[in-house]
Amino acid sequence: MTERAIEQPIRRRRYFSLWYELLRLSWRRSPWLTSLQFVIPALMVASVAGNALALRGAVDATLRGEVWPAVACAAGAGLGGTMLIVLGALDGNTAGILIGKVAILDVNPGLYRDIATLEGLEHLERTDYLDRLTVIRNSAWELVLSLWTAVGVLFVVIELVVTLFLLGTINPWLLLLLVCAALPLWFDQKGSNAIIRAETATAEPFRLQRRLFDLGTDGAAGKEIRVSGAGTELARRQAAAWDTAMAGRYRARVVAAAWKLGGWTVFTLGFGAGLALIVVQVVRGHSSAGDIVLAITVATSLRQSVFTGVNYTANVARAGRLIEPYLWMRDYTASARSEAAGTESSPEVLREGITFENVTYRYPGARRPALDDVSVHLPAGSVVALVGEYGSGKTTLVKLLCKFYRPSGGRVLVDGVDLSTLDTEGWRARSSAAFQDFGRFRTNFGQSVGLGDLPHAQDAQSVGRAVAAADAEQLVGALPDGLETQLSRDFGGVDLSEGQWQKVALARASMRPGPLLLMLDEPTASLDAPSEQQIFERYIARAREVAERTGAITVIVTHRFSTATGADLILTLDKGRLIEAGTHDELVSIPGSRYADLYGIQADAYSA
Figure (spheres, rainbow, N blue to C red):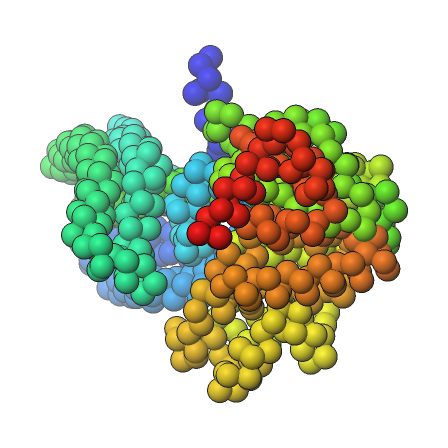
């Protein structure tokens, strides 16, 4: 048996498992609406069969001159037809309400929760994850719809069985129409699979097109685009990415249409042959006129059932383009959570410090490690500066300390305990950080700062202290509503400059009063030199004060070497390797020191 043949039953089981889960969510949200999705189709099947039998009875009774039986059967046929119309409208309305409830209240929040609560950042930097996220973004409605479409397929099959049974009472040969009815489903499945493969294969150019479109309509990027005259080129690339994505999908749709045409051609030929057989049988006197009415009614219903079944099957197959990446992302989430199973409590006070033992980290798909066999001890209570050129591994080291990544090799020890065994939520609750690619939260100023320590986010004293630590008091004083000022013009607020946004981020990082680890990754890159120096002096003073209470370690990533001179330990990184470690005086005294060379180059540049 081929690998593909083995995968098909596994895939079907996983689909059924997902649909069962969605069914449970539907029942929890609304038991009566969920029940109606089974009751209504069952009544519609009964109405189809009852309508056909009543029409046959009405015709045969009329020909025999039996008035009241003919009237009764005609009334039954009318009732059956009316029920089909009413039930069809009711089915669509109730299904829409139920699907909306489950999609909006359960599936969407669950998906976003999985994305946002994974411990690490690796999933947000992997192209395979982002490609699948692009496919399923805002598709919760379609995921839930796939359940009820599958239920619809089940009732179409039941209707086909009932229909063929009725035809079989006229002539057993008519049961061969079952084969003709099945072929369009199989042909359509082949075409739908081609579409699914195409949409997955073209996810990357589609994501590129969306990103280029967003870039072209972004106000911040718009300034550079217009000054550089890059607008035309961006539009060309956006259009090229769109054409690439659509070309692949168009070809798949042409193939799918060809498959569908073949299936319906076979069904039409079989359908015509079956009707011809019944007419011949009636002409020869082997069947009644009612039988031909029954046959035409049932055969017409059969054609509609097959058409509906093909559409439902196609919709289920198309839902596969969402279900497959959705299940893949859930598997990824489950795997990531199982790997991040730290349960140890974080220490209240650092006594020894943090030790890197032969730590290596390689980003997925990268050819060389971002950190390569790094071993160093960061003493408790120390201020550590990380220096080096861009791409040397400084930010990666900080992210490992935050548990955003797990080392590819080696380990990080906190007071002798492996960091991977510590409870992540507890460890991060004892950490604070300001990153060079900081967040711009579109709340009011005070709320944006308070996000740095949610338990004290509404404490005006804590927020005020953090604002002072970031040297942002003058900024708050200049705002129209102080801490209550709404940020970002997107919501009718105030637009801040890059440097002002950075001060908000620094204030946010100052919210926690007693962290064990304070990380500042190029926290003042957008500030002028005097502001930067003033902020660093405040942070160093605060770091010393906190270290006396908790043994806290402060890690500073900086491109200005004058900032590093006051650190207790300076680490020089180059291409992921730790090449030097020591104080400022120790490193500048080493002949040929990389730190000394970079420090001298920068000092000469500033003095010039």
